[in-house]
Image 1 (tube, rainbow, N blue to C red):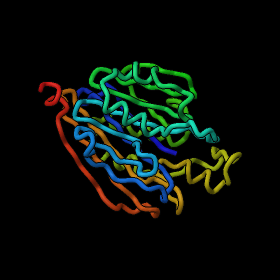
Image 2 (tube, rainbow, N blue to C red):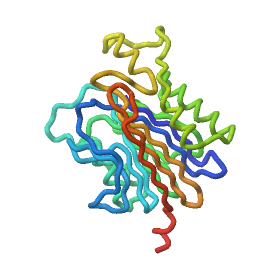
Image 3 (spheres, one colour):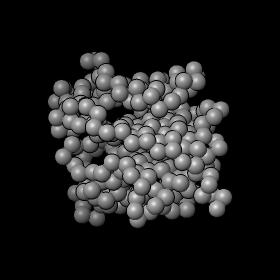
Length: 257
């Protein structure tokens, strides 16, 4: 269960505002966000099990993130890691919509992709069967199609909308949004496929449980002038902060060189 809320061209100063929680098994090995030695323009965490990443930004003005679908995983050995989709986009040059629609859906288990450059942001999903350039607006994505009205998505998307309207966007305000541990009301919990306590814990924007939960929160503020502010905050299984990394750089410098 991951969560992403984002505003695309919905603020007079920021081209893209994005706030994301990565939820994963605490036992799955991963490295926190860093500049990749093999692609020095890419800033991202790395899944040490499959080699890809869940969210990445680039000095070349390319950003991508992926979520999986809440579904039974396919058993074929031909399935590739969804994390390679993100790394392939940020290290490439294909426009977002063309990239999203060019992927072979059969190669991957269910995913939703967001891919952006300075001109457009595209959404693609091999389950929803949708590949489109998004209009200016405020959106939410979890482990289903774009803007599926789950409690955590609606709650967080509205919180982002309030920040945009009140011109209160900042790294701290976005991190507070992502730190929301309020689960859905009891009558909104779908426990048809999961035990009720687990289903309820997964309904919160920020998940805390011993084996599976929010591993990191990421915020991105990307201005129209090209200045990009990136923050990643990491957590342990108890929800305690274990580290914070901040990076600020211009995506325009590389384009001009």
